[in-house]
Length: 145
Image (tube, rainbow, N blue to C red; front, side):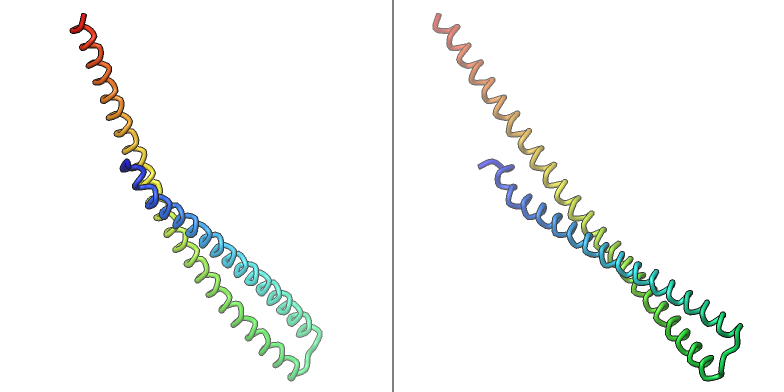
């Protein structure tokens, strides 16, 4: 069994690891996009609520209603802050998964390169052996004449 053939199971494992890493990158990107979408929705809602608050204050508002608006705006601001932290964490996770995938791809490519190199060496050795045999037959043919 040739070295390249013996390396095949290792190459299969490396290819499988690369595929799994790519799937983890895709999943991390999905989570990141969802978190970014939630943040955008939350920021829009907070902006709309802030405009409503400003309009209400301009038209006159009671103390209780003013306090309720301010409390809700404070909760919205905290929710936006927390969602920004989630977005930051998902971006970090996505970048880390991408690095792991790139490393897996490098390993897979390196193994492919080694296998190709070994196959080329084996092919060259086989060609040299075949040429020796042809030369020997040709030499025997001349000697026998």
